[in-house]
Image (cartoon, rainbow, N blue to C red; front, side):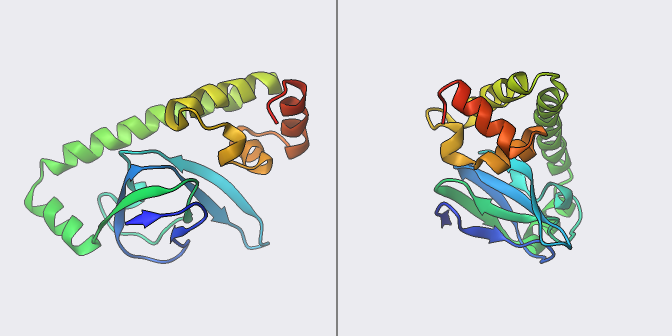
Amino acid sequence: MKLHKGEILFRQGESGSLFRLHEGLLKIVRSHEDGNTTLVNIIVPGETIPHHSLISPSAYYATAIALVTSKVEVLPANQWYEDLESNPEHYRTIARQLQEKLRMMQQRIDQLTAVAPAAKLLKMEAWFQKYIGTLKLTDVLTQEEIGQFIGLRRETVNRLLRETGRT
C-alpha cells in the first residue's frame, strides 16, 4: 500500500490491522480531549506497528500519518495473531523489534535531557538524518512538531533555526 504525505494510515481509537513500514516515515499523533494534538513518535522503515499490539490486540493509541510518500504492508490482525500462536519463534522477532524501538527511545531521551535548547535541536537533527537522509528536518516536520518532539516551544525552534540559517 502506498501512502502520500499527509495521508492517514489509521486513526486513534479504531482497531484493525497491523502494519510494516517498508519505505518512508510515519508520524504518530495523539489527540487530546481539548482538541490539541501531540507528536508522540516517528516510525521508520522496518518497524511493525502499532507496537502495543504486537502480542495482543488493542485499539490504536494514536493516529498514524505519512510524513513523506511511504510504502506500507498491511498485516491483517487475525492472521498476525494466528501466525504468532502457531509459530512461537516469532516472539523473538517481536522482542528484537521492541528492543530496537527502546534503543531509539533512549536516543530521544538524550535529546530531551540536553540542557541547552540548541543542543536538543542538534541531537534531534543528527538522529533524524539517520532516517531521512538528504531531506531537511523542516521539510518533514513543522516547527511545532519539532518542538513537541524535543520539549521546546515553537518560538524557540524558530529562533534556533533562524540563528543557524536552517529555516
